[in-house]
View 1 (cartoon, helix red, strand yellow):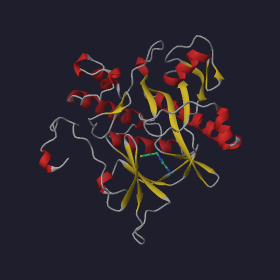
View 2 (view 1 turned 30 degrees about the horizontal axis):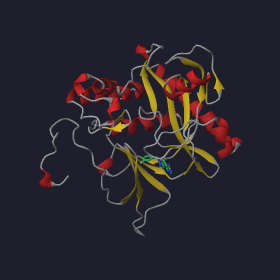
View 3 (view 1 turned 90 degrees about the vertical axis):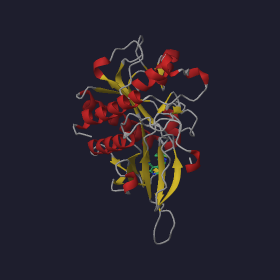
View 4 (view 1 turned 60 degrees about the vertical axis):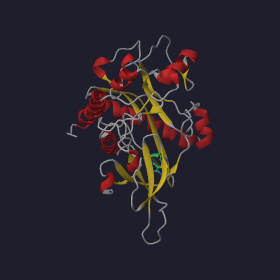
Length: 313
Ligand code: PZK
C-alpha cells in the first residue's frame, strides 16, 4: 500500500493491517510460506548470501480453513518462536537441533531464529497420539493408518494404543501433503535413516505429551522436519507449536466428535457463525476478524505458551 492509497479500509481494527514481509538489511529473502519467511544472511565480505545459515522469521499471520486470513494475531510469531525454542531445549537429549542463535536484528527480534542450513529430508514426518483429521479418514476407509492396523470401533478424538508414525509427501505450497506408507520412506531414505526419523518423530510427540498433559494440553499429532548434518539427523523448522501440531484443551477432551482447538477455536467459531456472513464452501476469502476474536485468540496463544513453559510471556 502506498501513501496515496490512504488508510487501509480496516485500519484501526486490531490486527487488521496485513503484515508485509519485512525488508531486512543484511539478509536476502529466500522464500515465504503461508505464515513464515526465510532469509539468507548476506556475507558482508562478498555481498553474497551465505549458504550455511538461514533466518527463519515467524509472522503474526494466521491460517484457517486453508486461507491465510486478512487479519494478523499480534505477537503470534513471537509466541510460536519462543515456544519452539523452549521445546528444542526440552528435546535436546533426544535429538540435535538446527538453532544457531535467537540474537537477531531488532526488526524481527523475538520472532526469528538464525539456523544452520541442513540437507532437508524430503518427507513430512508426522506422528499421531490421537485419532483425528486425515488419520481418522484413512482409518474409517481402511481400518489402518499409514498401513498400521488399529483396533476396531475407534472414533474421532480417541487416544491411540501407541503413538504412530504417519509420514506424508512434502507438497508444494498451496497443495496438500499426501499420506505415504512407511515403505515409501524406506525407499526414499533407506531403511536405517527411515527407522531413525520414525523413532525420533514418535519420541518427540511422546515427550511433548508427557510435558503437556501435566499442563492441561493434549498434543493430538505433530509434524516435524529433519535435515542432515553429514550423517547426523538434526531437528529443524519449528517444533510442537500450535501451527505444527493439534493442541487440544485436556479438560474438554471428549472422543466421538471433533475436538475444540486450543488456539483457533474462536476464529473457527466466528468464521462459521452467521455473524461472519462467510461460508467455508464459497471459495471466497474469509472476511477480517472482529477485534474481540483477535484479542481472545492472542490470549489463547499466550496461554498455551505460559501453561507449557511456566514462564510469563
Ligand atoms: C528449510 N523450510 C520451511 C520454514 C519458510 C519455510 N535448517 C534448514 N536448512 C535448510 N532448509 C530449511 C531449514 C529449516 N528449518 C525450512 N524450508 C527450508 C520453511 C520457515 C519459513 F518460509
